[in-house]
Structures are given as structure tokens and as C-alpha cells.
Length: 205
Image (cartoon, rainbow, N blue to C red; front, side):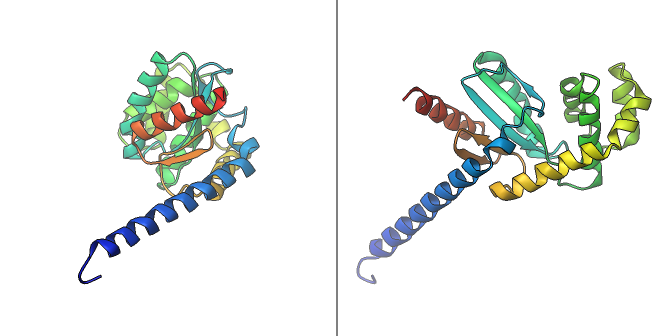
């Protein structure tokens, strides 16, 4: 190896490729085992129910990377009539994130998940009750009902279920995406679109 260091480099490259392959196999197995929970009809979404590809996003409303990729995801969905995006609230960045996710899911009960989410993602990340109240008023929601629903144990359970599912899938940060049988972690829209293309190609075979 001293005479030919490329032998070591080749060995390292082969090891990395094997590790990546094993991780992909593990990801596919986890996705297959948890498919009913991943594709939960109760989760908020945009796009047609019978779209030929569905992107599942685990996101935190305060996550800077989620906020970075969000407008690009929205633009992609608007220009792709056969794309559906499903949102799974995963508030892992502390109490302000929990407040944001609780409020968004409470707003869903008034038919306003998407506009509330959009307003939340466009606001400063230091989410608190005053901000939630302001957004509620701007959207014309029933503030008393929103407060009550935010504290509903069913919403707390929903967030706990999302966290448990994320752990099963190996998602340790946000955003995390499930597309077909692939797991994509990070804010690279290119990687998410590549996974969507692969899922569409696989569906045609």
C-alpha cells in the first residue's frame, strides 16, 4: 500500500459503497414495515389523492432547512399536477416548535392547516402564543376553539406518533422525506426529485 496508495483509497471507496447500500436496504425495510403509518389518510396534504407520486415530509416549523426548502417544494407541487405532498409535523426543536405544530393541527380542524402553516413558516422562528393568536386572527379563525384544540390530547398523541414513526425510519433531523421506498434526509430538493423520478419509473414497470 505504501508503493500504491490507490489500493487503500479503493478499499475505502468500496467500504463506503457497501455501507451506503446496507443503509438503503435498511431504509427500504423500515419503510415497508411502517407503510400504513407513513401513508396515513389523516395527515394534511396538497395535491391530488391519486397522484402518481407522493412525497412525505417530516418537518419542524422552526427548522431553518425546512423553511429553506418549503417554497421550492410548493413551486414544484404547483407545476406538477401528479405530485402530492403530505406533511407530518415533527416538532423536535423545543417548546416553540411544539406550539407551532399544535396550532397548525388545531387550525386543520377549522379547514385552515395550509394557510396557517404557510403563515407560520413565513414568520420569525420564535413561535409563541402571541404569534399563534395573531395568525389565527389574520385567517379569521375561532381563537377560543383553536386554543382548546391545541390542548386536545388527540393532537399530542398525533405528534407523539409522528416522532415514534420518525425514530423507526431513522429520521433524526428535519426535513426528512419518504418517497416511494427511499428515505431522503436534508434540504436538497434535487435528491427529493430524483427519488420521485425513481418512484414513478418503478411504478411504470
